[in-house]
Amino acid sequence: MRYFISVFILVFLTVFSLSYGLTYTVKRGDNLGKIAKKYGVSVKEIIKANNLKKPYIIRPGQKLKIPVKSKKKTSTYCAVKHKVRPGDSLIKIAKKYRVWVKDIKRLNNLKSDTLYVGQVLCIKEGKKKKKTAGKKTGKKEFYVKKKKIVRKRIITYRVKKGDNLSKIAKKYGTTVSRIIKLNNLKKPYIIRPGQKLKVEKREVFYREEIVKRRSVPFGFIWPVEGKVVKNFINNSKERHVGIDISSPCAQSIKAAEDGKVIYAGDSIKSYGKLVVIKHANRFTTVYGHLDKIAVKEGQLVKKGDTVGYAGTLNGSENCGLYFEVRKNGIPIDPLVFLNKKSTSKKVN
Image (cartoon, rainbow, N blue to C red):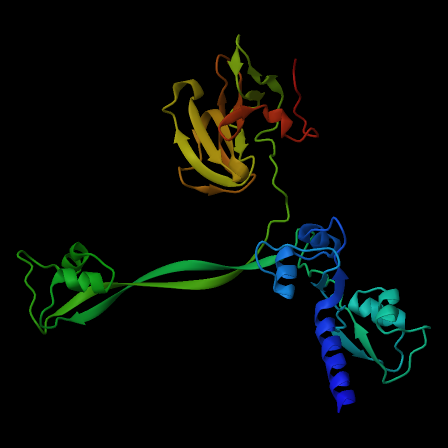
């Protein structure tokens, strides 16, 4: 009986000891902080494991249970399981899953490159290659654009009890004045139940269109071919924040890049007849001293579209164009952006 009790106590102590990892015998000069640091645990964990009471005094020879943290087991999780098929090889499988051959061998404890059909391999899947459509930019060559279409048609409406012109106009997306005009109604514009009215019904629908993306990158073209007769100057002595380009009179002036016309008029005297176009990337181009303007404010223009015709340059009898490029409203020398292969020349 004593033998079984002894065995039970031994087993209990062994299990109890294992749960805490190890037992430490306190030495002279030890303290809880020093012991905790030695075994990579906290003082709080040692106090709890040994049920110590304040003021937590320890003495040489005293045995303490140390709750050593168990090491984390390396995960054997398989991201992908591959069953070997006829014709498979380690190189072929590695290429398929974008991993290294050495990683497959290590994960599957393979000593050689030999595989057999039906063998199941653990694969740690590599990074998938991002699929890019179209060109290097990753954008698709075509995209779907929804075009808004508004259609108006005349219908016959029978007046109901409680109706009035305003209510009918709102229902069909028209105006009271339009209903009055269509039906030749006279003041005080009284309508009665059962009366038939002509009403202009406004119908809105969208049509999808496949649009090809621009293949030409953003960049300015010369608005007119010719010689630069005055350069960009911006200093304390003189301010000429564009360039003067000579050309034949009434020569067509082209938009330097796609954009939207934000000004077209002659209210700024120093520029004469003027067109200003807003572009992407916060750029603006200015076309001054035009003989005639060919665009309107709010109009969208494409690179190369005619925006006007060359007039007389400021302070000269010669014809041409005054041209500016601005970024965030700040003028920049246009020759920095214009193609040097042009026949235009810069003068000193």
